[in-house]
Length: 146
Image (cartoon, rainbow, N blue to C red; front, side, top):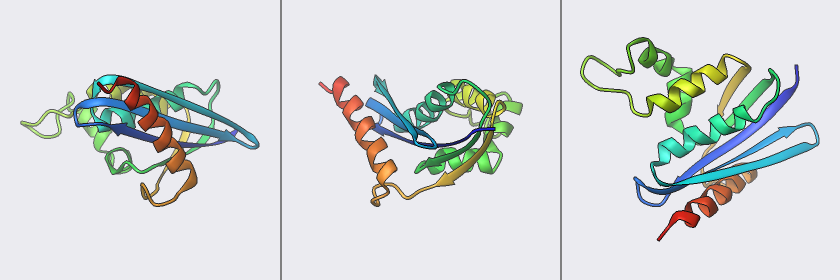
């Protein structure tokens, strides 16, 4: 099974507002950058989209380490919250709906296709790949800024 490192970040100017996402996929000496954006979104949606788009770009099942500065994603996956939300009809508890169920559903489905480990990195702290993903995300968000 191929071992792939994925680095992701999302950005949003205003929350909600114009947003962007960036991802780097690295397999041995090979590296690919991906990015995109939306005119009216949230930071969390862009963080999720970065991971989804990176995983969607893979053509076969892989052993993956995802490096993200998003505690929202890391905690929801590692603590099992996202799976619980789905099992409970996208409810966080008896009265509060889980946000972004469309994206969480896609992410959970993609995670089943691979062996994935999540690794949290501190954002805006000089981590080269995280800084590059932030640059990609911000550049995309600026395309939609008025």
